[in-house]
Length: 402
Image (cartoon, rainbow, N blue to C red):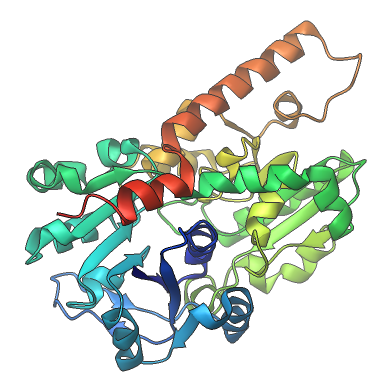
């Protein structure tokens, strides 16, 4: 069986890595990266295009990890040739609704509903919808998606094309084998200090908690300083993709004022190299995650590892606007709020984390910590369903094609 996985964005890499690692012996799996721009071939009313997200450094690191099974493509002809030779194509981005007839069988990994309506548009006009599957991390993404009401008929007609499984759940099992202390020692990170993983990112307008770059910057600096004052070792991560640096976040204080942030940071975990990639390692070894603005890290990597989530002091009216707006936060983000899994009160946050004070914690403190863990565990079960990559291979990629 020949299978190709398409990588366009750096965020596709952990999915490709875990499926490649866990592939059955009878599967020949190739990893194909698209490093070119291309407009959609369907002429959608609201057009979409394929963009360049990967740096050459990313390409080199992918080559090192996947070896001969990795091919970077720098034009459409090269890209099509790779998928022409495979029986099943796996995509977690825009490719299925950009390229016509890209391959005979298509698996769309719409894990958190990023391209939900686009995949449904593609499914509704497909000549052979029986050769398309859509995978989401949880059934809740289908039931609560903001575009669900506009696609009820399409969903009812093609409900058997949806599968619910999160292969990235395997990362916890993989990292648990080494354990937090061994990983910290290998990285040169202290084992006797509480660790804060700081997501240093200014969110897009529909997700942000801030009125301006200035208010974001001031809150982020203050939030990190509070953690430093309380003895936390600071690990940080920035988004440094091509699109982030040249288009979407070119004026973000994360980049324009990074010199000020760097004074507070003990260890940087940028980039996607290694396995598991740094983003997963950082979220795994930390005691608390500080998100400087709303990010998908909070409801994906963070909740797989059941990491407590701390916020900076945000602009309340902006927070509430995007929380309540249909086109603001996604369903998973809203449920973090509803389940009270985020706080900007440091004293309250300490009751969430494993770093406590032996012999000095009151019954109330312990009770609050237990309640938080129960809410986090419920969130994890709700939003990260299935039995990992094995279920993905056995029940989705290799089975039930009509």
